[in-house]
Image (cartoon, rainbow, N blue to C red; front, side, top):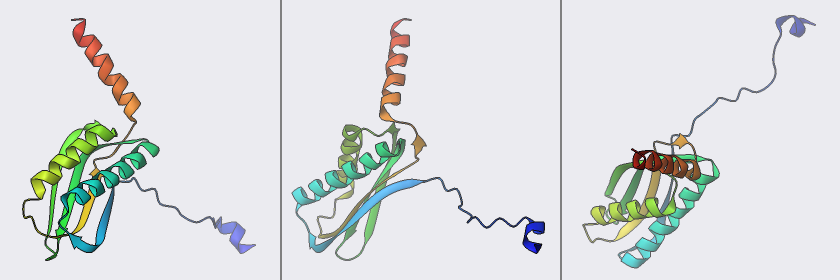
Length: 140
């Protein structure tokens, strides 16, 4: 009876949390200097999180590539990009950043990719907006 008077709500509290970034890292079983393997891994990880972006109807405006060397020194590089979830754009930028970052030619222990500056949306809507702007521009 006392509980009813106080209007106690027994439902669990679930805080709302907006996702700020999405990423993945891979620590290798053995350190590697195989550039082809590193590129393939970069492509695999970028495609994986690009799929997650599209699956959650989000676009990214920033991409970060991370390398950890065998001596445990970690380096990252990031770039802002026009908002997208398109594989071809994200892959090109990830590869460009990797090329700028991998200068030490030392054994690599870990590689990572992260997308941040996330906004709601999808690639199709972005594509249509770009087409409308082009059409409006050509009509001038």
